Length: 552
Image (cartoon, rainbow, N blue to C red; front, side, top):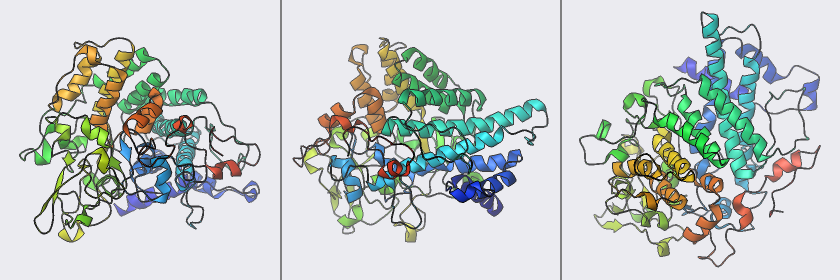
């Protein structure tokens, strides 16, 4: 185990290496030396692939500040706000001009930190550069792909490339949904081709690259893999469905979404299973419990899982910060940390009152198993949680929170530790069902037989919610259902940008982001994109890099 971990650490350091200077034009670059040693057989590429998979997992860690990286796509929307509003997050929460600008730390990283912690833009480009390195090296001749036959050699090679292209598409998807047009880089960066005159390629150009990458991944990834370090083609098909919806190609989106849903290896969790099967609960929440996450543990709904534990020797333990981000800091209420309350939360982000208001009381997704609605203090006093719009105030430790991310060590002495180490589902089949419903709705297919209403109702029925009729289906209803089902999982800003609903729905359902609560301007039309990081603009000395409209 230690040997495997060391190999992966070496690979991660290798593909994260990004610094270039004039001296690299005169001598053999260190990254090239390491690459020559690593990329000579299939095992070397596997190590690099494991390291590459670390980048998406970082989305639920806190490489920049004390909240999940993905919070950038969740607060300041109709579903999320910042309960603990620190200076680095205020701009995303209230859209204050002084805070949401091209120099903000979340975008640029901590330029004063000697360790050089990068912002979101550079994290994603490090991911892209790493994928490009693998793709480039895999194309070299005379590599030992260890397949035993020419056909298996080709399959091993293309599966490695497919993983790299899938992750590259994942990174570019985040970039264009956050910043709009961005530089397109598809080659390994070396001392010979280092440049400082990048241009911003259009969203359409990047979408074409994403489509090409995802189609390659769909062709060469396995149909189903129980090994969560070996991704399945359903992930590529899911993202293709989303991409085609964004491009207004609903018929193509329908084909890809159906390919996922019709795959017999995946199905919605509709019956109790796993570690809490015989305890009070509901099928919806079973898929979030530690011990139920992996496909090998019975989870048929998970399309993409982040392995954070040491279960099945999955390459070591990794911390995640979802609980820390989304669970209130209830210890301030004289409540002890415990497994019942999921461990330690610090309430950086919270679910909006609007989301809580759109559930039926009988909906399992609003039940006590899914939403923390009360605490019991050390003195035995019961404290009811707040869910009303008027109580959306900074540092409200009584605010209700999701139980999707509950996890703590079994040792009482460790109940208050900062991070979780549970495996987590990143992408679920329920999401694909709602993409299919959207694709059908856009085509006018809303029927309760095999139309949008049917697939929405499949989601609602498993949570004991009332089925809807075909005439109730609208885009807004689908977005409401996505909120009910995927709150804190979905990168909501990206969904609302894709559907053209970010400004409208944020103003309507989040009175903090709209400016109503504090009497400020709040979200403006130009906030559909975030500012381009100043550190990137200034580093591109060979050609002017334009800032997004509305930002200085």
